[in-house]
Length: 261
Picture (tube, rainbow, N blue to C red):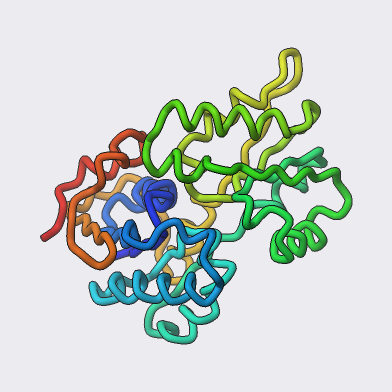
């Protein structure tokens, strides 16, 4: 079994680690675009062009499924990716976990990039799944870039700024960018108020990993013999995991696998 994941940068690590936990025997292809990131400020047409290039690089390795582990690419490029690659290659997009967060009754905060915050796409999800609870959209300028570069001081500043915009009575936080899942516990600590029940964080990594397995008819097998193949593509070039990836637990989990050549 071979699962490919794509993103502008290392935000795909969370979903890749989720796949690794569900199916340690799956070979992984991680395709990102350091030459073209960030994708957020690009036009939808540019995002689609870069996403297609990254997806094609991954598809050349003949995976069984492709996870689009990027909210921005899922918003703008998913129909184009599916039109080109399916049905030969199932394509699984990433959707912010607004529905399960709202099911808890709220109040809910949605942390996302400035480009996504207030977007028609996000407002549509709120209208569809969270119209009955209090929702605060929280822009997080600089957080994805700080995570991408493993810049500890910049992560602290960006998390603190977003936490200051998050109402103190919030009971759930939706992590609306895949990069944010790599610093989930730092986000939880920043929004947790003394004396209140723990804040629940809602990411997408586990859900997209499970959906990818469903799409190819594979059941979870967490005790399977681990695979030894990890292919890393940086703007189409075969490489090793970037140093910044190894600053996170998810990157260390994947780094324990020998890179494929």
